[in-house]
Length: 227
Image (tube, rainbow, N blue to C red):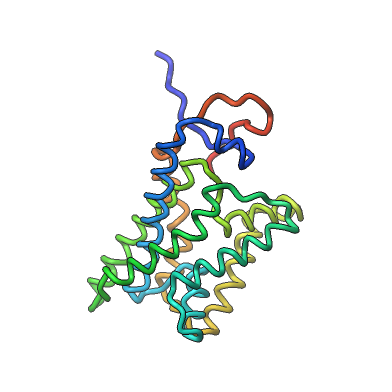
């Protein structure tokens, strides 16, 4: 009996992403994933145990500007997109949606998620947020409508400079973490746990979330191995 082939991520230009078929399903999955991702961001804040490196920076900026977390996330998303220009990266529909909607969802989450009191509640909220974050990431990546702005920055650095993707990610995240910590962002053991766990958790969900597209017709649409 032939083993069924698992869906794979495809390397697609922004225009090819829109033409790859199953668009209604993919756009719904994209926004569900982005909504869960933003809600998880709020959950990490309410747990008080530490934030993801980029969110340490976002939260630190909110402390000094009075802007909402979601507003800062959106502003930094557009700023990061400007860095795509010298890297010759092209944003997809999902990239633009990522910039805007995650910030909106994060602000909604901060309204509806209460602050956790006591270590058991904090741990439960953090763990739940980590799972929701991984599921949200798997859903929006699996929709195949373009990477998030921060992920695109790292892959762009890798493509244009030749440095490893791991080094690009580590270098960027250490930098933003240090700046965010200096600004008063929430850093704790949850920050370390997030850095160690989010990759495997997202990968676990991603294998079930990739929407298979039409067969590739040219080299730019060749399948890519899931990260």
